[in-house]
Length: 271
Image (cartoon, rainbow, N blue to C red; front, side, top):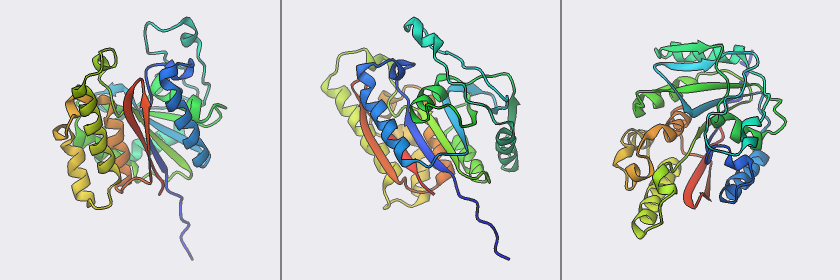
């Protein structure tokens, strides 16, 4: 008797922009919104979505397990309308438990959180990708130690999920230097942004790299040209580590764009 083959997940890293601005018609996010709409047209409609958000850190990997999580409008100083954004997607306690079991099977300590809602790392890209809010969502935290190796390992554990038509989204930003967003451009800042983007795109896509070599690049990402200029703190890059840890392969597609005047990128793995 043939064993049933469970379709593997699609894996997507998104650069989710600045707070709620992508949903407010901000000109600096037009390319980002158009890029996500383009990606949405390429995706199969998933049965559920697991989002690893740069905006949630815990001591251990923690999973939302509520049936109907509320939204957390976790940003400050934006127009009043941004605090009334809704995205009433249901949770998925069954998927949350599967995620916890997969992490535990890999020896990764984890926890369930039945009270936490969805932060803007989830609802901003999801509202563009799937505006109907009819797909169950679960959110997974980062670990606040921000270890590259440990987040690669979390991704490796998620590869064991047997969930049909799952979409895994790493929601971060390939460029995240808040001071640089508000400072005048210089030749040096442009060069550092470009150098890191070129390194990152090569790392994610080059078939000349072995997976051992690619993994070492992710582990030692801070040694890349422009790395610490683009990421003074790495929480917005680590969702990409989780994505690659799960895929362990070169990405299928790269999406290059500008967000708020900075070079940025998104990555899709089809498995």
